[in-house]
Length: 309
Image: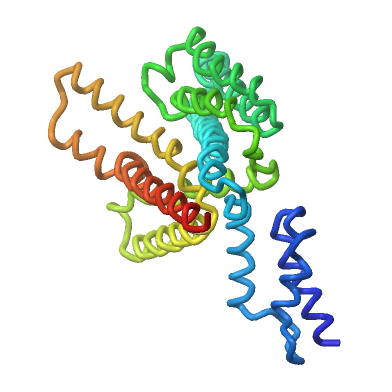
């Protein structure tokens, strides 16, 4: 009886794998996990559960594909475009709500003109991309970078991250239209889940604690450490995340570079302003680290592919 219960719980964990992989390998994996010796255990061990979850992440990341490097790059590009649009929509929504909270109701049409049109168009592009309408998403993303600016230059003049979102996403979506036929698109549910994880990464508090008490700083440091560790644990298995997260950090970097350029034109650029670009973890430092880690990942994936061949 206990082995029947244990097998049932193993199969529940195997639901983390893609359906096609389960059909081909589920019974083989169950036989390996149960082994030949009788057992009284009713639950998988923590190590087994973690291994099964990481195995599922690796399968989604293309480890079992004929060309894992191609899957890593092409699906990573697609996920990156989704993550950029989702992050831009989230930042835009936050700024839109904040605008209404601080006096926007006195002139709601101005707020909607300055930020609302852009938010709607970015959201529409994201929905089209999630729905698998890549060509429609490409058109909407280009329009989201151009049309709202024709109505109001507020986002463009301030170089805000949400304005950069469709600018960064558009070339990713266009490039994705040339995805090779033998590389399958990222499964929709998996893509949405991965995108949510990348957006959540940006919600981890990473700065602004200079004026708070030490206990709050310790709590914030613990949250940052746990959040980053969880992301890296997942990304080490599903390495598409390492490719996809790069453009999300690019939004913060472009925003900071735009600020520096404005200060330079105004003759107000100083060492403090330049150092700010390096001290913001959501901008240049994270972008540099993400690029280096991703380059190493692509190379290691390529080497493993050659070794396996």
